[in-house]
Image (cartoon, rainbow, N blue to C red):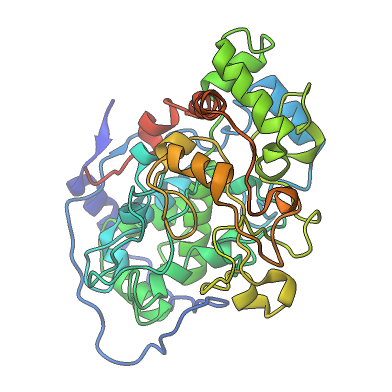
Length: 403
């Protein structure tokens, strides 16, 4: 396969330079600070990203899903959060991939989105809290970006403060701990000075102008293309789980009879005797608030969603993550307090604490825990490992193009 080199990208830039750039667009709706004043961040121009001459296929990600998942999504048209004004394109997602992994996106060229979201860890980083551009630690654990396309009308981050993926993508860039850019205007200026972005923006948007809305759109396209549907469990759904062991099947049964799937899958297929999709987390509306509290502490110091909404029903509640690839995304919980799945099982078995906003699935076992034997816990973990998608974590179209 032929790849675009730095020289060919520069040639494209020179050929297109006869057209004068218009002024860069001003970003809007971001959640961070920065007023565009002060010294511009330095530009670090690494080698050009290593991209295929023919772009990878990002457009047909959904079309390549197995029949059962297509059928499920056809009945839940509310789930796909792709806006009409920002459909996935191959050129747009390619640009998004470069932006996702480019450390020029941070104020001192040390951090990228990919610094906290590693492909081999299902786009998490294996740390309880992540170091930012100056090695300060983030407040919460890095969430996976897999299947973010199917969070419907729900919002992003543990505290659900971003209303859409387009809004979310620029917030870490401006965060004073994560990537530290002073403003989106400063980011526009910085990326405009990097030669390899000219042809990429032109391919994605028709001209070379680097604008904050385009940065957000391209990042969102790439992230929406990252969908997991090739696990052992997915393969088994085509044959009534004939490929799963007795232990793995029992683990699924235990997740269903103990109501775990009511939080971590869709309600329509969560009950025992059905086959959950595990594509989404769908318990919003069952609890008092919009998130869930799982009894980690009786009195939370981190208010979670309540810190954003200021509603009593949301205090100490957090967005419920999906379980796909969960064996790869340790450590667990919003603060990364549990290093292993075994530790998570122990929490639900013995450690659930009472809280006014405890999820309704756990209210009956507060102070005691879900009754699980050692074998039960082992079987649940065995099943959870069937949700690992080996293809996802090695797919070159999601890999770091700077390596």
